[in-house]
Image 1: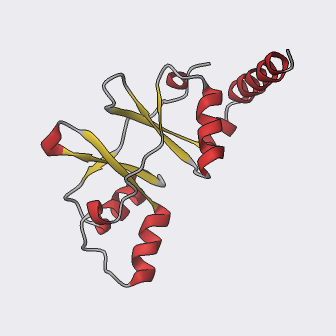
Image 2: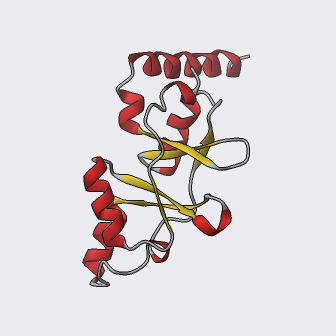
Length: 142
């Protein structure tokens, strides 16, 4: 099963010039835990992601919520292509200890986000992951 089959929500993003407070408000409004950070100046180019954890770090540091998202977002973003297998996204999350991956198109433009909750919530997803792992086990045993 491809990732594109489970990306059912439109991409919700914020630009680098918005504040951390703007990001927090948008997360609350949309009931999500991560925003894709893009650059309006560079045609929606993926710059990073900002998560609830990033916002908590800002609050704990005392820096204030009026700082630009660009100063605190995670810039080393783990991505997968829309035509990637679901198991690839799950492996990437596990390897990097993260709960979200950004789905990108062939031009590396973000098109969606897949969360661990999305993966776990899909029975077909779990089956695909198990089948992928079985293939690796059997092919690796040769």
